[in-house]
Length: 272
Image (tube, rainbow, N blue to C red; front, side):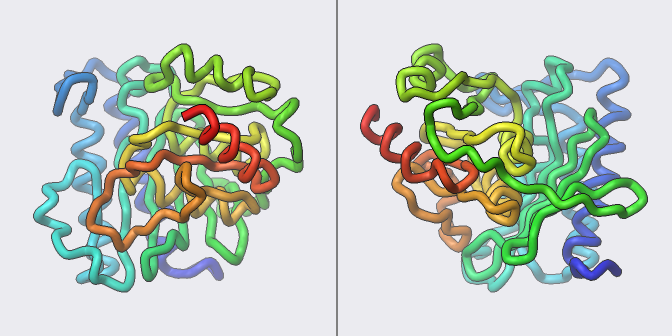
């Protein structure tokens, strides 16, 4: 066990195995089904979900697992638990279907309603990232070598690069980025990978108007960005409450290097 703890070790190993499963599906023709309009699902989503839930349940018996492809009845009452797993088995299914490589496996751990730890593995990139709030954030190589990651030092919206969703960004929202004085909008898939790009300092801000996915989209992302020195809140500036039985991110999401959080919230709320 590493000094990052048993939860990190189990989650990282499981996410890496799930990533390998996903890549096997990715390498061959696969069927695309739809849970709802514009909400695709594939065998990769379902197999990854089943595997991850089984692995976490075996290692942490009784701990609720709120996972995207699970029956909600399987995690009913999770809001009363001290610790809860939030799992997105394949974040960025639209990008997976488009075969552009912008998808991730995300495992987040919340304690007492707050994001504590996040693991994000990018299968097509062959990269893995871990953040533990209060301890730090790292890119983890296959051999276990840890390289610290940190958010950028950009302290002005002028010149900042801002990430927006590839599949959920209307043209007027992308245009908003330039109207608030930022350098440019960077279009990218997967909320988890956008969080990674903020956490490693490659970009300065990631935001999404409401609704901004579900809690399984937020938990690992928030933990990684915060652990790397940044900030992640809803558009009201409030932290996400993972003990709330409503798992919709109904008030949007803004993740930044921290220096830009207040300015971004003000700019976005002025243009609601």
